[in-house]
Image 1 (tube, rainbow, N blue to C red):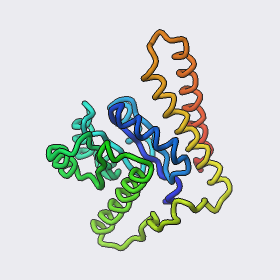
Image 2 (image 1 turned 45 degrees about the vertical axis):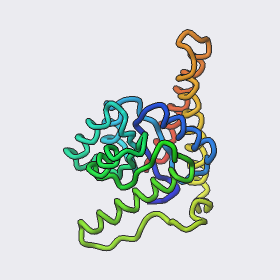
Image 3 (image 1 turned 180 degrees about the vertical axis):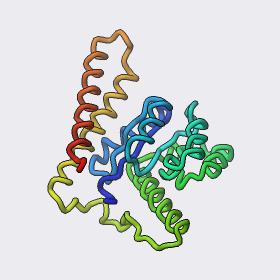
Image 4 (image 1 turned 90 degrees about the horizontal axis):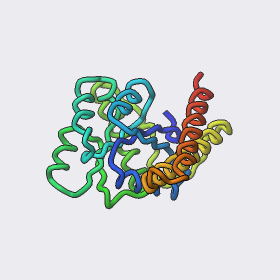
Length: 213
């Protein structure tokens, strides 16, 4: 797996998404794309049908426990490394993250472009180590922790363009979500924001099709 193409799914409450969205805006060249799932049903469907390299789960989300239970019952879901998002530094949430087998955890107050990147990369690498131990074989870590890793561009021009476009779509969609949550339902701009979200989704779907062998 290329470190520059990691796909990350997020399920959580608005405070976390606002911080994550801001982080995406501040670091559009981050070596992964984060997409928001609006509901448990959507998250389960996408985790089962699409390829994801990590899951960001807000443990304060109403559906968090259901999703964690589903991961234990479904080998495919359980294989996706989990980054537990904690609303506060509380033993209850720490214990919940450990019980869920989270490969990394992150506090709401500590969410930033750098901390997100560190948590996601640590989770993926930790999951790789666990998998290699279970199989009894050694594996090379797919992600480079060197200081220059996040600064290197993909060697193929097509991959570089695809990565840039996907990050741009994430930024647009994240800001559209923020606007949607801030606008009154009767505001004239709501329809425009909805159209922006539909357009970014269509573009993201097209990018996935183009990258499919």
